[in-house]
Every structure is written in structure tokens, then in C-alpha cells.
Image (cartoon, rainbow, N blue to C red):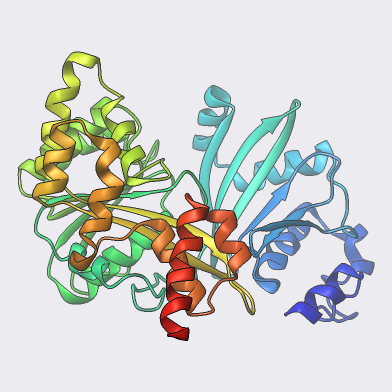
Amino acid sequence: MVEKWHDWMSRSFPAIPEDSVFHESNWWNFEDDQYLSFLFHLMVEYDASDIYITYWETPVLRVEQEALRVQWALKMTDEMLMNFFNILVSEEDKEVFEHEQSVDLWYSLHWRRYRVNVSKQRWHIMIVARLLAEKVPTIDEMWLPPILKKLAHTSWWIIFLSWPTWSGKSTTLAAMVEELNQTRYKHIITIEDPIEYVFEPKMCVFEQKQLWKDIVSFASAMKYAVRQRPDVVLFWEIRDPDSVRYAMSLAETGHLVLTTVHSRSAEQAINRIVSMFPTDEQPQIQNHLAENMIAIIIQKLVKKAKGHGVVAVHEILLNNTPVANTIRDNKLNQIDNVIFTNRKYGMQLLDDCLVEHIVKWDISYQTAMENARDQWAIKRWLEQLWLKVVS
């Protein structure tokens, strides 16, 4: 992969022969739909997670968490970007774009699906696309913590998956849903913006709803979901107090709720949810969280030490009596200590997970330190492990 990448950055593109329609010599004869297809083909060819397409710049691919410019590609003109816009964006989505100046959508090309955001920057169209997996991955295929299987099989509660952006949250949630699809007879509703993974029903019945196409808001979709008799409700993101209230209501009425929230730690996730509400309501929300939340999973992607790809590292908070009391009493600064003292029950801090991956040679020491919440904690852990080895 490294040699291939070096060849590519040196202007050589061995994967595309000279007689191919996608060869560099043919670019100036391309229609815009062909060139867009070519750019998306680059993502597949080089295992890129994302592509950035903006005005008067050559495209940029994100490979192994680094944004690398395609130096030899064509610079984007306003005409090209507008034509890309018309190819990607439906008439319905254009109405959303007119109102919001940004729109999320999915696009299918050559049997691959892409999640696309179209927005504006400096009065020009900006396109960011993410390549989705060819099929819905499983928990085992992603090497996710085994506790996620157990959590997926709970009958009710709320599970929060968290990290700010681009951490694979939607893929992990999809893997948990696929676990149920392969093992249980359930009715599952997903509420998304846009729909990313299309589930093939195996043992479960699916309703997949997309914002602005099937529903007018997350809150209204969740409000009426209970009337559709689901067992599981997956919705994309906790965005406002209403979505929190409906998630709590669904859990209290016997549904499993899977959702995401933007935060970097379990403590921060709880703070973020509670702080959405006025001060006088916060004690009640803390009580509801203590009673209805079963887990907060923090997930971050970090670069592998060897080879190509990334590793998912996790912080795991599981609800029990000490956790519930900590939330009710608003002593959230004690959450890390509660996680640490309950490791035997499957909880773990993010830094503990980083140390575990260093020991397995999955990630480098430098990568761990760059992503650590407490660098001294990682150093202490490694010193203790080294003392055990030499003794």
C-alpha cells in the first residue's frame, strides 16, 4: 500500500491503464458525470474514507486519517461544481439546500454507496463525500468490544455512542443493529439524515426513515414511533431537548434506543445532555438518565502502527448503582473514578484502551500519546507493565 501510494503521489497511476476511459489523457474529454465517477473511483482504489471537492482546488482524499491532495488532478471550476451539484442533489434536496445552504444525502455509484454533504464556502459549492462499507459490517468483523453484543440484546434502555465527528459511530450502531438482524425477531425503526446503511431483512423487520423525505424532524418521528410498535429505535443524533425527552419516553415504555451525542468522554456526554435543559429541569433529567441509560460508549479512530487502516478505541460506561447515584447527585467529576473501580464489570477508560492496544502492537506509543486524555496515566501504566515483565 505504501509503495502504491508513493507511485500515486509521483503522478503514476498503475491501477488505470492507458487504454482506460479514466486515463489522465482522456480527462479533458470527460463529461462532468464521468469525472465525478472518476473521483469517486479514486476513493475505492486508494481505500480513502472521504473526498473533499472545492473551488479552484484539486481534490483531496482522506487516507489513514490524513488529508492528501491529488496534485495532478483537475482544479474545480464553478461550472464543474454546479454540474456535480445537479448530478448529486435531487429536486427535493435542492429545496432543503435553498433553505439551509447545506444538505446531507446519499449517492449510489457502481454498487457502492456514499454519504455526501453539499454546502457553500466563499460563495462556491463545496462537496464532501464519505465512502460507505459494501455491506453492513458485524461486531466481530469490526473487532468491537464483545460487550456491544450483550448491550444490543437488552430489551430496553438507551445506549449512547459518542465522539464529536468522523469516528465511525454510524457504522458501529449499524453493526449492533445487524447483530439483532442475524439473531432475533424484532421490529427496528431507524431515523437518519441521510440513510447510510440499507439493511437486508434477515430475522428483523425494518423501517428506515430519512429526514425531509419520510419525516419532517427527528423529534416528530420519535414521537410517533411508539405507535408503530417497534422493539428498537435507532436515531442519528441527540440534537435538542425534545429528542432527549422522546428517547427517555421510548426507553420508559420498553424500547431499546440507540443514538449518538457529540462528546469526548462519558462525563462530557452526560453534561451535554443535561445542559440542554433549563436549570430547574436538570435534576429531573438526571433522574431519568440514571433510570433509563444503560451505557455510554466513547469511540475514536486512531491510526494503526503497521499496515493500512485505523483502530477503534473505546471508553465504556455501564450503568449500575454507583453510576446512577453519581448521575443523580450531580457528582460527574467522579465518573472516571467510578469507571476505573468497576473495570471488572466491563467498564474501561479511553486511556486504558490505548494502553491495551500499545501492548498488542496495534498502535504506536506516539499515536497513543497524541490521543490520550491523560498522558501521565498512560506512562504510569506502561511503567507498571514493564516492571511486571522484568520482575
